[in-house]
Image (cartoon, rainbow, N blue to C red; front, side, top):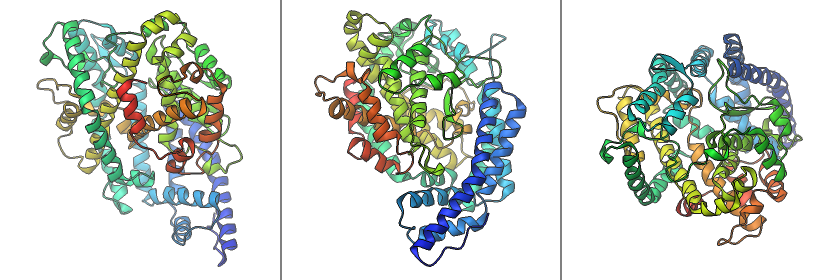
Length: 550
């Protein structure tokens, strides 16, 4: 492929860029599909052959983007102000950033991909050992959710961190390689590079994180005072004796269900029919997506959950490891919230733009739905909860929403600050830094005399770098979307939001398809947020949700 010399006229430049994009897509699209197919099979089976094929194709794609002549062509056009055609200029911006990120030696690309795929494989196939037996992540979460035995909980929590010691060495090598690549193209470190190339401003982001930390501190203080008292009673310890294994999951990402547990609403029930019925009611059919999903545990399979579009068309896959409880019901709604976004992107858009506007925007779609397992109207209609019971539990359910959003916010602060620090200085005492941040933001006391790479057991550092800020930004946008839907689309009032319609009115799906999904990546995330909600992305709606549990 040659970049094609741009003509002197605007028309010539547009034609040259159009030819360039067509040639590049013809080269990249089939490799992209083959790579995604290999990634899917590797995650479903754990088969090393699929992992090797995914690594080979990933390296090949990255090497294509490392070619200097196409990058020079794109940089020249971008520097001259583009070509005056919105869709072509948007593709120009995205492709120029994609090429910029890969202007590094092929040997560095190959070493990076090899480490990334190796780490992903180890996370997918790892099973912790407790009391001499290999157990799944689901089994560990069940102990932390249900057991009142502190010693048993501690063993489960420590087992959840075993993978960290196994991957720490390779992960730190990968961090150094990523930093080396970033410095090659003029950035201080990989973290800063990835934010810039993902259209995020680092100072703006951390200013917003600081604002959220200050804004949530009084709410967090009241919540932790109450939670600690209740947990201390449950486990028969003093509040200063509470440790991370007294929380209900390995990282304190989920708010412990102290007042109300919603697991009973899903016990013994398949979650697929509930998922399909809900999305159909709001006008977003998912039967075809469920047919292609892989939803239950199996040996060697990835133990997490994700959604991926294999072909930027109809082949959209969801992976889960379902159990009949509220955690996995929420996860199903979340992952199919990603899937419906992919499904309803305009197929007439150019291939380069046939993806969500930004990671934070698809996270907003997912989080908008994932929250609903703590919504009384949704529980009544889809989980079969008695309406009288739901009304009696309404205050507790609203409290559960508020607590979950608070817990997620403080957890995201840990991850964002840890990852930035990791790439700024990977040689520092990371084990100590991790617990410094956990104590600072989550108020969870570190275990005495523990010096283990607990931070490295979080899979995102290895396989989804510089991603976590998108969860928090996505929650903010989800709150704005929710407020806009309730008030402007469904005509509700702040004091009486029409939740019964929110969970069952096709107008919800119509709005999301037209205002959020259809445009793909034709606009950046800032413009997409404005077009969808009528306002810039900001913390006001999210802070309101934190305050009142809506």
